[in-house]
Length: 437
Ligand code: AVJ
Ligand code: FE
Image (cartoon, rainbow, N blue to C red; front, side, top):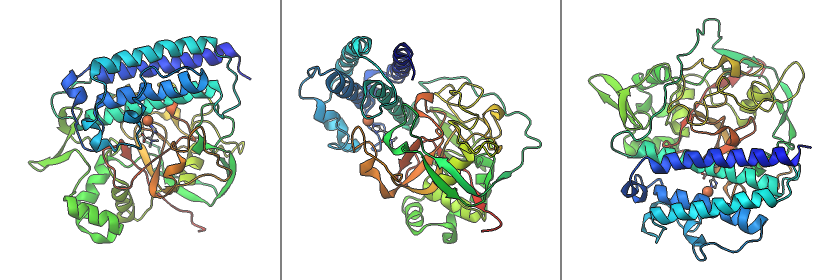
């Protein structure tokens, strides 16, 4: 059992860190840019800002503390299921100043509730300690969503961050590693802030397979482009082929060719595509086509998790590839510390026991798997978080991008999206069957 003061401090830290990031993302552009729709794929930033606080109010002030609504009648405006993203700019949303005032009213009361509420871990079904963690993760997830909006936005750079360090010498790093066949523990039953879809821990038999030690790079991906990969139907899932034909797609999102060179737009800056960086902004269909062209395949979700968590010496599943310690800057590129992935081969301190690097951070990694519940799944605290998305329409992404905060990232964390999506911070690595298969 963790003592209540530690639980309180953790919740406060997580909420405070999230709010600093929200303030940065909504404070670096003017009010016109907050209410504008930068892409029909995204909400105006001012919607995310008030939605974050509306969820915080509903869970921490109303569900946990039993308080009354602070702004009666606004819930429906910020219900993601009631209004699709493309329609949100035409809603009578709180204006930027009102949204900021609402956010600070809610947070003020939440800090008061946090001080008075008894906290106790180990009871995930909407106990207060879980609810604070869930809300901090929710805010950070919308911060990543807002960072995607920033990437789609036109105009001069509004965000700045230091570049990641160059990759260390990777001589001796094998291209791929063998993961032995057999059982491992997938998912978790004791990670206090794990969300419903990560639970429960259960045994999975995963046959032997091979997986690349680093994500697929821009340089490798360019060989696929140069080889005519986007013009060869053989590599493509029929629905992916239809998408690239319909939209004239011939490279990852934000790339363009100029004078025989690939350039890309990155948070308002145009630069040559860096060859040794993991490829970013590809759809599941593009990842799947590349893998087939390369004579390989995407890993399944259970293969990805086994490569990340399985310790072949103890047989135990770790919280993270590097062990059970919370993420530190030496382990992984997380938390928007940098505005891009680090070069392939970075973060040797973060590699898994089997020697696989950059599983956490840098780019979300598409897996071949549909988003489905684990055996024994129980929806909580609301079925709209995960349960309504289960099924063949959504593909699972693992590991988290440079835009994911450590609070919303674990070896068990599951993300999902439609296979056509490319504005998200998505990349991939490839795998192949074991020799015995
Ligand atoms: C888990 C990233 C797919 O952004 O749609 C935010 C997270 N759920 N608010 C999303 C989420 C409710 C979700 N993803
Ligand atoms: Fe949300």
